[in-house]
Image (cartoon, rainbow, N blue to C red):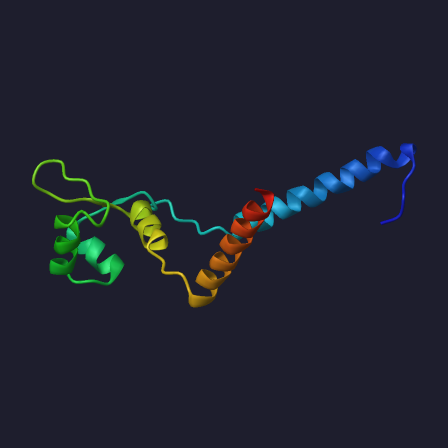
Amino acid sequence: MEPFSFEKLPEVIRILFEKVEHMEELLQDLQPQSPNENELLTIHEAAEFLKVTVPALYTKVSRQEIPVSKPGKRLYFNKTELRKWIIASRKKTVMEIRKEAEEHMKMLNKHKNFI
C-alpha cells in the first residue's frame, strides 16, 4: 500500500470501513445458522446426536461424565453443552504431547539457569 496524504485520509478510512463491512458479511455467512443450538434434547435425541446407544448414555449420566439436567424424573441435554463436552474430551496427539513436554523442559531449564 502506498503512503497517503492527510487530505486522502477520509477516503482511506471510507475504503477501510467498506472492507471491514465486507469481511463481517463474509464471516457471518461462514457461521452456521442454527437457531436451535441451545435446544434441549431428550435422552433418545442426545443418544442419536452423540451416536451412542441410550444405555451407554445412561451409564455416562450415572457416572457423572456428561453434562445433564434432571428436573424431576426426566433427563435433558443442552446441545451446546454436549458440543463443548465433546471438544473438551479431545485426546492430544503424540506430537502435541511431545511439543508440550519440550516447552515444559525449556521452561524448567530457564528456571534452573535463573537460580
